[in-house]
Length: 174
Image (cartoon, rainbow, N blue to C red; front, side, top):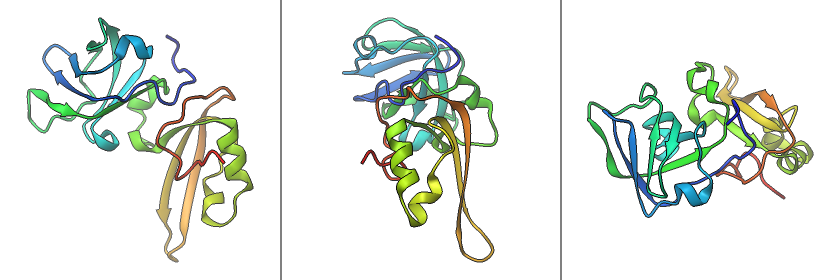
């Protein structure tokens, strides 16, 4: 796979466990092969990527895959990511795992419809409007006057993002 793709959500069905010594992911009723998961996709582990992210290195079947490295996975001292852990898989840019400017939950795949809807919005919703559709980094903060500020940066401009992830709060589809 290329350094990034155009799919915001490749898979997120069921749950997984990861053996951190081997990098083997074992899914419970997952559909890795059928969903089109492939080497180079990014897996975000735990709700809101609380356990980190990794790059898929291989897919053996619907229930078995592997990660290239566990470097960006936080296990809390455990030797395995426990059974029953949630996940999402996307084609977001691989280099974002090492980007200290954005956390895993601050990078979005924004399609042209989402961009149009946000650009037409008003108030705080309009603050999330990115300059381009594509892979977008977004940081929010409250300034010294108590005003919500939103910083957007287009990481990879692209009009072909598809398959919506759970980002409808920032980027509604209609």
